[in-house]
Amino acid sequence: MQFENTREFAKKLDQKDPLKSYREQFLFPKVDGKRVIYFTGNSLGLQPKNAKKYVDEVMKDWAELGVEGHFYADKSWWDYHERLAKPLSTIIGAETAEITVMNTLTVNLHLLMVSFYRPQGERYKIICEEKAFPSDQYMLQSQVRFHGYDPNDAIVEIKKREGEHNFRIEDILRTIREVGDECALILIGGVNYYTGQVFDMKTITKAGHGIGAIVGWDLAHAVGNIKLELHNWNVDFAAWCSYKYMNSGPGNASGCFIHKRYHNQKDIPRFEGWWGTDKASRFLMKPEFDPMPNADAWQLSNPPILSMAPYLASLELFDAVGMDALLQKRNSIVAYLEFVLKEIGKEVTSNFEIITPSNPNERGTQLSVFLHGEGRKLFEYLMKNGVIIDWREPNVIRLAPAPFYCSYEDMYRFGQLLKQGILDNH
Ligand SMILES: *Cc1c(COP(=O)(O)O)cnc(C)c1O
Image (tube, rainbow, N blue to C red; front, side, top):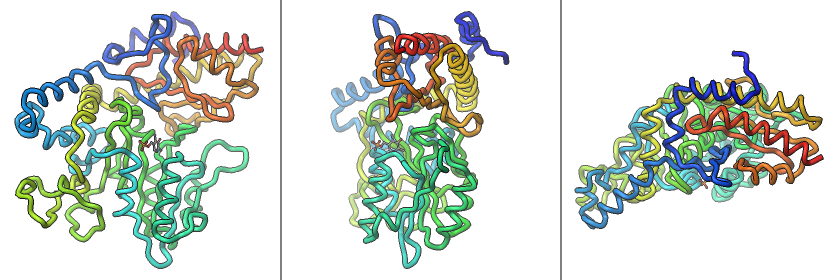
């Protein structure tokens, strides 16, 4: 399609957008009484209107039933988390049994390391990407120290080439080959949080298994953003947070994927709690741990229902739309934003560079833009004018037009504000 950088054209795209009605299912912050252009769905997704209703239901059940809500609430609490596994399984590309929802992301990564980082003899190293999300770096460093290793030796970072913004698959595969028999685990963010680069999870997982390593993925920036086929890709485990593209609310529950081949292994090392025991006999309060036959065996505590309620509301929207429709709109709105940015680049003297891969198969919703020669003043101008955006040092803005609630007209308006901001800056 031949794009045009005009309001009329953007509006026409909005009229034809099969997902346009979903914009009304979300609550937008406002600046000067007008809905903001929201580019930070990769950081905290907007609130689905139904989220409050679902939370209110739990509050009402608690008020009217007290503890009996565990069994007699319309959506009983004792198995509330199971309602999330089904819609998540289609988003993750997994069997329902391979999904569990619990805790928060960094906590879950630590818990999964108990099962999946088991260094032995010469095989103790972990491969990750350089400049991984800080929480993942701290998690890995503390894990290797916990096992008695030196992070400088035990953690091998895949490097980018000098002057390049993205990782090359041949460099990733070379690192995997080089570490070889010493590699216990590969753990990478499925989508890089800084550049938005999508990793070839299928190829990397296969290469990791080829050297006898376990392969896990942090899907914080991937879930609800890109096509995932974790089961078929043979991924060993994965975890994600739900408050980014999944719109579940601040600090909300995390999800885990554990491949079926690890279920029903009674001797797998794991930190256990009562919600991981077989639900049929859980309330007999027996001293022996009898694991659930699925990923729920990794559950520890009874689930935080108030945190799961908005997650459920959000997942129902994903289920109604389906990932395929969402990804179609994603491709088209990101392509339009890219076009608008390039047009504006021609109109202003300033030079900005999109550092996210231009190949649609190597990116999701996010475009990261290097604003050469612009400072924080531009960022502040945009924020003042109703664009919610984030800034990463040295001067990169990350733009993530979530397909659920961003419009093509938002992209056009953003382009105009960016142009004005740059002109005012000089
Ligand atoms: C957002 C994000 C986190 C956040 O972890 P929490 O435990 O939810 O605070 C961790 N890792 C990655 C890669 C992220 O993008």
